[in-house]
Structure formats: structure tokens, C-alpha cells
Image 1: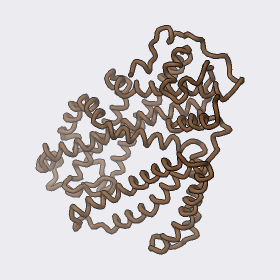
Image 2: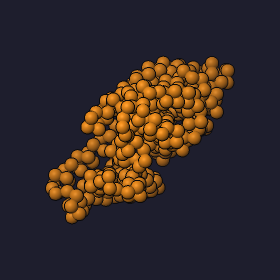
Image 3: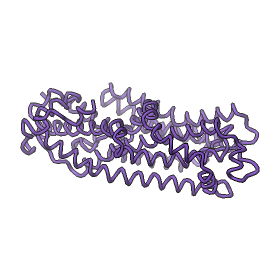
Image 4: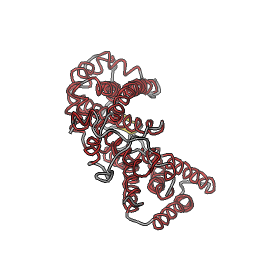
Length: 420
């Protein structure tokens, strides 16, 4: 009734949701090399591209470089990450329809290309000088990738990347719902002289932004601590609601999973610490990525707004400077036409906005309904699917099943249903 192919499909479903710890321990490390192939493909393409772009940036003369050249270099820098990512995704898609033997052959070819062929090619084009050392470094990187895949980091990372892409696609909804609430505060702070003076003093005389990054890091730390504290309480409530669920609740939730109509009676399996940690991590990453995307939206909004609304002479008066630094930079890359003072203020306010957004996800009813409740709906689905998966493939080791009609089944009011 429940064959090996079905089990593998369900385990792949868990991994795609960033939940590798739910998969049974005895099968967690199977097909390790083929599962690591997309990550190895990413490394094979990323390393030479990164070396080449770094060389170009080191040769760049900001004073003499024209705008088209700088924009082209920015596009190439973005392609350094985007191209390997999409090629790795394509390889992952190709591997899904192949037998285990073909997947192993493809993985072996990628391994040889990355560890042996790539260093030889880099030697020929002058990117490296010591081939054996480079091969050893690349072999060590392969071992690290295999270990991360074994412990489930690859599944969590790929899930986080899909969430990030989804957040970028939904950036309009994110900005329209979250940005207006912060607009009054941001504009008040943006036009305050003290904000510009503080941001200006956070950069050292030699142009380094160590203090500015420390402040942004403090904002990120406070946001993380707040998320962890709230998720601990919300997690307990989610588990309590899950334990109170009846069979009718399971049938409704499992209809959204590969296990729909395949489990006659779902049993209750206590969660291990690893499973709880895995579940908490994916929710934390999803919320953190929302805050990061929101901070990026705020940053570019302030850059565009500052270019339109604030003349350089006004900024000079606020900072008591005879002239501004016209070579604004972000991560070492020049932003043509943007002053460095505007970049620093946008970074400071966007960092604070990300922290404020992370806190508002729980405290503001509108934010909670739009951004947090859908994540908890996915948690309810994952918990139900986990119990169904273990009921089918753990045999008679399971404890007694849930009651046929628990409190949630009686009320017919699952949390995930409220968010649909």
C-alpha cells in the first residue's frame, strides 16, 4: 500500500520544506553525493566567477570609471551569484527524473570537474599558482558540503533561498502593508539633523564603516533575540493545539500534503529536540528573511527619496561640511550619483526599520495576520504530515493515536483555516 517510491517522495517533500530532521534517521544519509550535487555545481561556477570579478573590482578606478562601466560591473557582480544559483537549480531539476545510478554518475562528473579540472583551468588562465594546494582546498570544501548535506543544512538553505525569492516576488505586498506604518517615523528621522550627524560620525576618518555596521549588527541581534523569545511561546501554543487535534483536523490539513487520503488513523509521536529545533529554525529564518527584505526596501526607498527631496546644500548645512563625498559606496561598490552621506543615513534607518518590523510581526495585528499567521499555518501542516509519515513507516512503535474528535475537531476551527 505504501511503497518505497511514495516514501521517498514524502521525504523529499519534507526536505523541500526545510525539515530534514523529520526524515527517519536510518535514511537521512542516503544518496548523499547525489543530493549534494546542486551545491557542488554552485561551487564549481561560483569560485572562478568570484575570482574574476574580484580582480576587476581591484583594478577599478572609481574616479575615471564611467557610469556604464560601473553599472556593467555591478551586473557582473550580481551574476556571480545568480548564474551559479540558477544552474544549480536546473541541475537539481534534472536529477529529479533520473535513476539513482545516473544521479551518481552526474555527481561523480561534477566532483571531478570541481576538484581536478577546475584548478587546472584556473592555473592556465592565471587565477592560481599552486595547483595541489588549490585541489586540497576544493576537496576540503567538498567534504564540508557533504557534511552540511548530511546534517540537513542543504535542505534548510535551499528552503531559505526559495523563501527569499518568494519574499522578493511579494515585495509589493510587503511594502504596501508594512511601509506606511513606518512612514511617519522614518520621514521624521530622515529629516532630523541629528540623524545625519550620528550617521556621519559612525564612519571613521579613513572611510571605514565599522561602527555603523556594529550598530546595524546590534539592531539585528535585538531583532533575533525578540524573535527567539516570541517563537518559544508561540511554539508551545502551536504544539498544544496540535496535540488537541482530532482525526477530522488531520484529514483537513493532510489534504494539502502528499499524504492526503493515505493514512487511515494518524498516531501521536512526541517530537524530539532536533525536530523542534529544525521547525523553530525554519520559522525563524522565514521571519528574519522578511525583516531583511523589508530593510532592503526601506534602504532603496530612502535613497530614491533623498535624491528627489533633499538637495546637497541642505545636507552640507546639516553636517557643517563645505562639500559632500560624491562617491557613495555599498559593500565597496560605487553608487553613481549618490552621496556617501545619504548611503550611511539610509543604512542606519533601514537597519532600525528591520528591527522594528521584526518586533511588529507579533505585536501589530495587521502585521501578524499578513506575515506571521501564514507561517504558523505551514507549521500546522508540517506537524500533521510528520505524524502521518511516522504512523505509516514507524510501524507498531507508535504510541496510542489521537482521539477521533478533539477540541479543534469539535469547533471546526483550525488555526491554519483562519488564515486561508
